[in-house]
Image 1 (tube, rainbow, N blue to C red):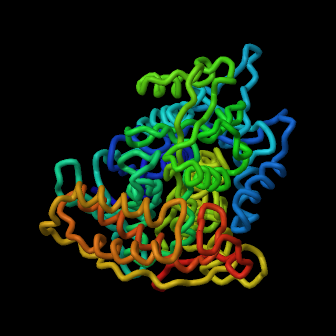
Image 2: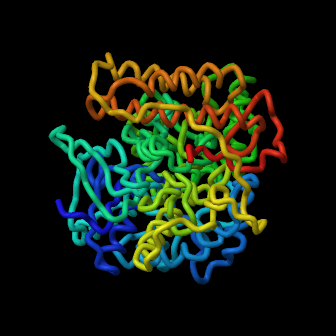
Length: 523
């Protein structure tokens, strides 16, 4: 295969937005490599919608910025958030031009919802709670028309590095054969790692592959301790857990404890609501609280996707309170990138959930995730086309390059846990059973609530699992989960405070001295 101009790893909103722009606008030779099929990404699971201030709204980008900064608990990069809220509306309009259809009223006006942490109704939805499916549909159709190379059912094992530059990936193709794909630039848009945990809203494919690959080549990674748990996943045996969208609470659904009383303001940011639910679970001696959506009008019309999921488990939102509990949902940190998505390694670019660009800080604001991918994926392409080749001290990258202008969140380097990057084959035993055991351990010891003792136990376990031999996709995914898990636990041990999506029960208050990014890098 000839060397590509741009190789995109992943088929979510960030990667596909970039691929379309690279091929259609800048006429690059683009390849897309994805472990599943193009339409099989975490994007399609996004229910909440897209947060953007469109023309004519009684809202402002300044208010969207302020809400994002508040949710991020002191660790957002102001410059990065400004890019998000200012460029977001144009990216949404481009998606609409591609054919994406968002919900409208009878007058043709967009139906805007309010969600937790937002001061205004600014969330666009498609099909009530099927926004991710619609966003992905529009992008997949565009990519199929424009990408030169599509490698579906192909698993990226590791980055190929030559003289300090990323020049491609080693991968397993759909037949299990090892291949190497070369490119002048590699955009990592591989999504998050919700499968670290036994209880998650993420699909089975969300195994932290990109962050693990970056850690193995010493690319800078930060903020990984901030794993956001969605407060209202349906408490049910199915996995991934069905997500009961933030929009339900935005429309007036109430959270109730075992005694039927409300115990939290449902429209606060997710970290606050998740902690309140965990406290209520302890008080009630229960494994779930209740979401009361019986007060909502037109449930079936506004939330048909959720209604279908509830029908499958025999629940009627018109009459039944819905059992809910927190579930792992989103990685707020990741591979550090500047405002153009350049990582600390030349040739390697990042966008979407795998990236730490400074937008989300310690806790992502609801419905900013799709917007993040739609904004920063195309920025990568624009930077490459302009001839950029290395990172600048902008966005979260300030904490790596040591910017001294006083702007941004300062960084504090922490040493990576040494994990062998070798991918040699061998007998690793029952991979599925070991994955299940590891996920249960992470949920118990490094989940919503953490302390020194639980984290100390988790780190040894993660390192041991990360050194298991790799012989196929399943064992490679387990290695990636454990590699990322070791990083999460290492950072969580050192962050001896409670901030955003990171809760230390032995350090329940925020510490001003820890208003820093913990950066894992071997450089």
